[in-house]
Amino acid sequence: MAKNTIHIPKFLSEMRSIWLFLATIFVVTIVFSIVYRPAYFMKTDQPVSSLNIYIYSLIMISSGEAIIVMSRMLLHYAQRKMTMEFFHFVLWLVLELVFMDVILTVIAFFLGNKAGLPFSDKLWHVTLDMILVIGVPYIISVLLFYLDDRRRQIAVLQRVVNSMTESGRNENDNINFHDRGGKLAFSTRRGNVLYIEAADNYSNIHYINEDKEDTFILHNSMKQLDSSDEYKGLLRCHRGYMVNIDNVKLLKKEKGILVLELTQGARSIPVSKTYTDRVVRFFAGENEA
Image 1 (spheres, rainbow, N blue to C red):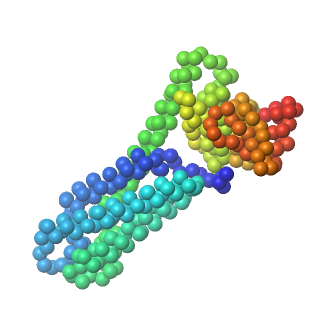
Image 2 (cartoon, one colour):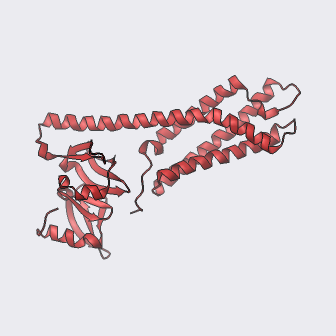
Image 3 (cartoon, rainbow, N blue to C red):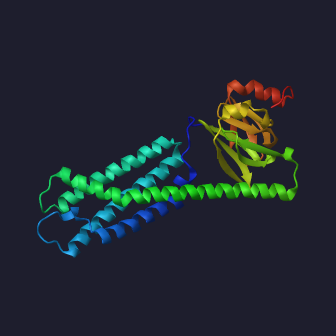
């Protein structure tokens, strides 16, 4: 397992969100160029035709959009291959903006510098217009993506609540997960929970939702979950994992270590040396989870 980290929110790494962000940037940039007609491309005392300004604008817009597309595709690939902290995501965006700022300044310096302005002046004008063009889409898109993610999590919770209401299940059949502040954040049938994965001060709850494995990010640590009597039936088997004992079908040794195979899903959960005795004693019927 990768080191414990705060995962990047799901809505920031989905391809749908990435393409929506790129489309927002493109539309705002086009509108900005038509209305504002940025003059830093061709700073000169001589009249500049509208055609030349729009040609330079098109070059700058296309170059900026291409840089963002390449950056986001690389970011999406990196997120699939490794676990990234939210700090790394923010750092990536900062480097993306700095790189784009420098590249666009170089383009403007060589293609639209009839007045012979120094590179530092060009950099200032490009940076200012970049903030005006990109700042608003960055803020709006992140807010929209965040609200959409909240909406989907609420919808998941609503389906779970409706399912429990319709089935008339006893409260003891449910398992309620609370956040660090003690507020109810997630509730589902106890049998739906597969395993829990640690992520620094968060915990990723892997559960069955409409016959498919899904994940809920809980703002509470694995240590807190393990120390609470409310989560009996969830067995700590590793520094980074807890499993629902009702969904364990097999305990076996692979390459010298114990692993737990679940009734659903293809993932095997490792048992670390620290928790081996605890797990073995449980399956031998000598103690409770």
